[in-house]
Length: 265
Ligand code: ATR
Image 1 (cartoon, rainbow, N blue to C red):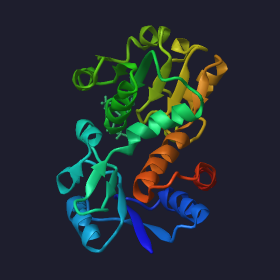
Image 2 (cartoon, rainbow, N blue to C red):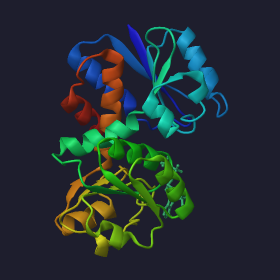
Image 3 (spheres, rainbow, N blue to C red):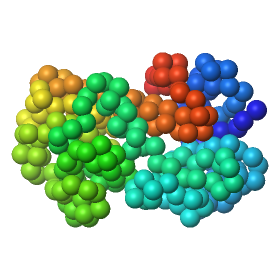
Image 4 (tube, helix red, strand yellow):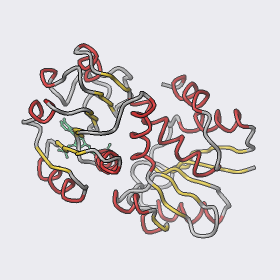
């Protein structure tokens, strides 16, 4: 039996175990997915321990996504993003990937959204970095808007064909944009939005990385003007799907994994 897992602190509310195990069950894979909660300064030690114990793959979440960078050999995209959320122990050296970027891309593609033209990414933290690189790699022009403007500008300097902005000019940034992704925590368990409703329009596809609640105020406002909306559970699903496929080498069974995830939300 293969053992996969997640390190984070805290990990108590993670939906990854039911999501991945639904995938193993659907494909008849003999595997378990367990959560580990190392002390906050022991992320790299935990990776080494997991390797020695024969764990086949690890997901990595807050606060360890940067801490484990030195404990693995880095996939080029994870290196550019500067954060690892998936480790594959197969074949000697543990390799660190970042599936958050591809997770956002695949969540949008699942909804038939064409990834060309211009994207506005709101937020320049960990999620914002991953999504900005992911969309730029698809060939989109990326406008990064962040409350702390210099962080958006710094990130934009690293991402191909990107520009950095504050939140003040969002209406203008959105006017001719095709895709909007909220990568801030605004809207999480609160009826707030980082994007004033007046800037939204029917030509946008809007993905909210926030998944609690599933229907955030941003997505409600977006639906009201006829925009295509994609909730944050799709991004969560596809970062897991991408990890599942790297580890198992199989196409992930999307429907059972999605059902298991949404049952827990
Ligand atoms: P994550 O890894 O989820 O991206 P993070 O790295 O802590 O988390 O980043 C949080 C993001 O949400 C940042 O872009 C942050 O903006 P700042 O860089 O200005 O801090 C953004 N954010 C958090 N609270 C916010 C608020 N009330 N209004 C606007 N942006 C907010």
